[in-house]
Structures are given as C-alpha cells and as structure tokens.
Image (cartoon, rainbow, N blue to C red; front, side, top):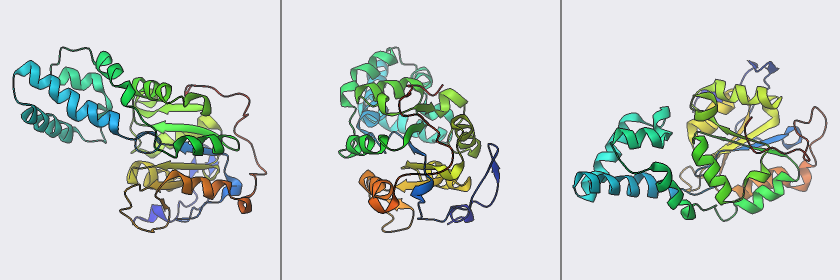
Length: 265
C-alpha cells in the first residue's frame, strides 16, 4: 500500500488546504458532496460487456467474414494494447474507426439501451443520500455514454454535476489534477467530499492522495475486510446516514438542494 493511501499530507489543491485522511475513516460530519463513479459502481457492466465483447466482435466478424471467436480475440487484444489509462479506451467512435466498421455506432449503442441496469441497491441509496448531500458523478465514460445510461435509469435528477472526465477535461482519472479541477468547480475542500468507485487506482488511490475521503467499492469481495473498502453501496449509506453521524454542520455548503442541474457545466 502506498503512503498516499494513508496520509494525504498538507498539499494545496484547488486553493484549499488538504487535511490528512486516514485509511478506512470517514468523517461524515464534514462531508458536503458524495461523488460516484458510474460503471461498476451504480450501473452494472452488462451493457458495456455486450457492446465491447459481443456487438463489436460480431460486426467485425460479419464485415471481414471471419469467425466470431477469432474476431473477439482480436478486438480484446487491441483493447489491451491501449489500456484503460488512455482516453481511446473509452471512445467508441475511435474503435469503430480503428476496426473499419461501417455500421453507425450510435445506432448500435441505442439498440443496447434496454440492457443498461442499476445494481439492486443503487436507486434506494441514491435517493437517501440525495436528501442530505450534494451528489455528483465523476466518470471516465464519454458524454454520449453518460447521457444514455443516466436517462435509461432515470438518474439525472439526483445529481448536481455530471463530469465526463474524458469529454470535459480531455483526461483520465489517473491524474490527480482531474479531482483538483472538480473540487475547484464545486468550491469544496477535499475533506468535504466522499468519492466511491470500483477502480483501485482511479477511484481510491488518486483521490485519497489529495485528501478526498475515497472509498473503494469491492463488489467481488476480493480484498476481504480491509479498511477503506466496502462491498455494496448500502455500506456507504450506513456510513453517511446513521444517526450517530448526525447532520453535516458548519462550513460552506457546496449546494442548494433546490437548484439541481443535469450536466457538468
């Protein structure tokens, strides 16, 4: 475990003084904003798996007159060569062009929209937290995917800001400055934000290095009972809404609950 997982130090981020953050501890009394990753956190990966590992290989197999398994092995290898730290990984237009596919990718995506599914506890947790905290989304998914998924699940109304890191900032969440920019836009101190997501580096290590109260969502329970790790969103809700934590008090409120907006800008 890296030292940034344990202590954020006293760095200047977006003009704020960063308080130390201890692994596994959430200071709910200071939280103003709860930030979510989207895919694998609120929404399952059924849609993405069908698109990237079924529909694209199927189209490639048809257009090149090759077997489906051969096409799937090929596209998977091409994805791996790029990797999730590269913006191209998230760009469906890039991949359709890269593979020379003639089909309209927006049509393919829209035809799969009925496969977009929330995790069972997501809506109840979001509804509960939205009564007390400002909710935002910080995702590497491009704006096209975010809009489609949020509309399909009727989630937009719960979030004040929806950040597509690749579309809005031209970056990926592997860079600390991404979270710094979000904090600046929200006018929030790092310790006043909780971020939860299912990518160890992007959603946990990086935000904690800035003093954000990050939580790693380990739905497959690979890490056991490690501090700073939860296995479903109900655990996050219990951390933030249990009576002993009380209502957030003091300091600047980042958000007026009566003035929600639907986009990141």
